[in-house]
Length: 159
Image 1 (cartoon, rainbow, N blue to C red):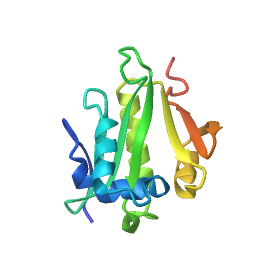
Image 2 (tube, rainbow, N blue to C red; image 1 turned 45 degrees about the horizontal axis):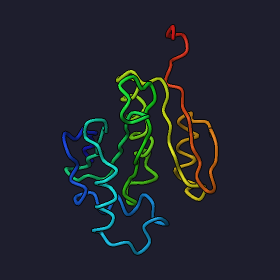
Image 3 (cartoon, rainbow, N blue to C red; image 1 turned 120 degrees about the horizontal axis):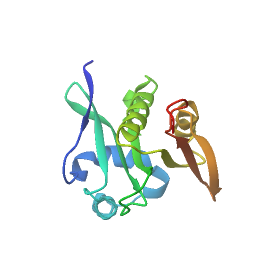
Image 4 (tube, rainbow, N blue to C red; image 1 turned 180 degrees about the vertical axis):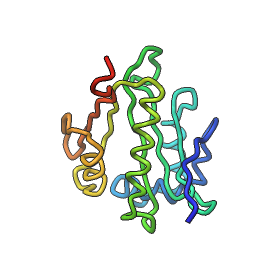
């Protein structure tokens, strides 16, 4: 299987990601129409600040992550925040989620961010385990939401 992670440019074609979007927050979307989901994702997107990367396997997008600076409009932000990280079910359990997470962390470091925040829900055991294994620590909880934090400052890097 040929794998590569590629960065998207410009506005995201969310319609091409609908299958991935449905997997990400199934409890939130329930019976929501594709049109409603696309509307929400479009509203949450800002190509000026968001980074989108895709895991492509044999020419097919099977994973995706998106992050932004936090706060989004700040020109001096040192914190990034994941908005989405998802992998097709038939590609889970093969280390590809960790591959995506490692690329996300590396990309944030390369762009000069010092901290990465991420949010999961309590019941998403796979995502929570992925965050823990990547070195995130639980920052706080809000209801069933867990906010994770990861320092991107390498020890011994003089920062």
